[in-house]
Image (cartoon, rainbow, N blue to C red; front, side, top):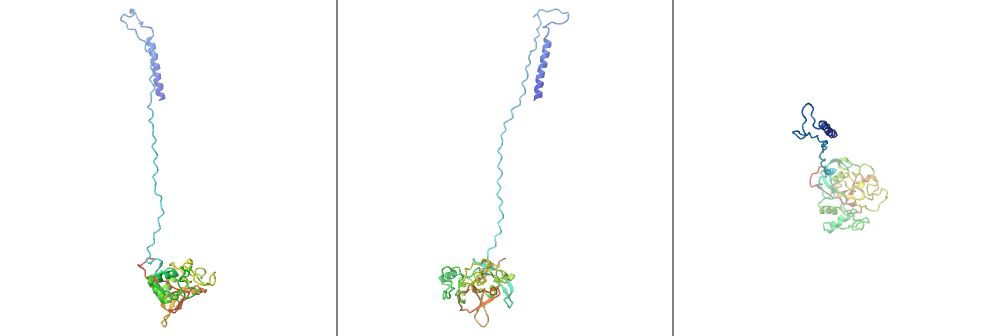
Length: 308
C-alpha cells in the first residue's frame, strides 16, 4: 500500500509541471502572422489547474470483526471402571453349608479304599441355639440336654457354642428336622483331610497350636466348649470350622459288627495330645451316650453337580 500511495502523489506532481510549461507566454504565437486583437476569434488558453487533486489514498475495507467461536467443551468420557470379577457359580448347597467334592482315598489307619460322592456339610457344628429352635418346632426333644456341667443348652452366653448332651438318636432327629442327615465316617474323614489333598489336620500338616479349641494350647486346660466359629485359622480346605477340637461329632458308621457303637470324629476341648486331632483318628461312642464333649454336624446331597 505504501508504494501505491507514493506513485499516486508522484503522478500529480508531474501533471502540475506540464501544465505550467504550456501556459507561459500568454497567447503569443511565434512566426510572421498578424497579431490578433484579444477576443477576435482567438481563444485564450486557460492555464491548467495549478493544483492537481491528489487521489485519495486507497483505503482497504476494515477487517471484518472476528468473533471467536466458543471453544467446545471436550466430550465427557465415561470413567473407565475396572472389570468386575466374575461371580462364582451359585452353590449347590443350602445356606450355612459347604460343598465337598467327592473322590476316592485310602481311609484311616487300615487304608481301606473309600469312594465318596459329592456332598454338602455344615460349616460349623450345630449350636445350642440351633437345637433350642428345633425343640421349639417340636421336631427335636431336649431330654437330658443338661447332662453335664459343660452343657450349653439354654445356658446364657453359650448360645453359639456347640450343642452337647445329645445321644445318637437325638443327633439323627436334629439333622432330619433340617432336611439333612448325619455323615458317614468315610465322608467325615474325607472332608477333614481336604479330599485329595490328604492333609494330616483339617488346616494342613502343621501341628496344632491355636487353630482349634483344645487343652494343649496357650490357654491350657479348658473347662468347656468354645464358640463354633472362634477358630477360623483351623478351617478345612472347603471352609469347614471346628473339624478338630471343641466337640466330637456323631457319624452313622458302626464301630464294628458286634455292637451298636458309632464312630465319633474330631476329638474335643478336653484333649491336649496333638495326635488326637489327626483327620484319620476315630472315636467310639455307645448310641445312648451323652456327654459335654460330643455334638452334631449334618450333611446332605447337593442340589446339582458343581464344577468346583
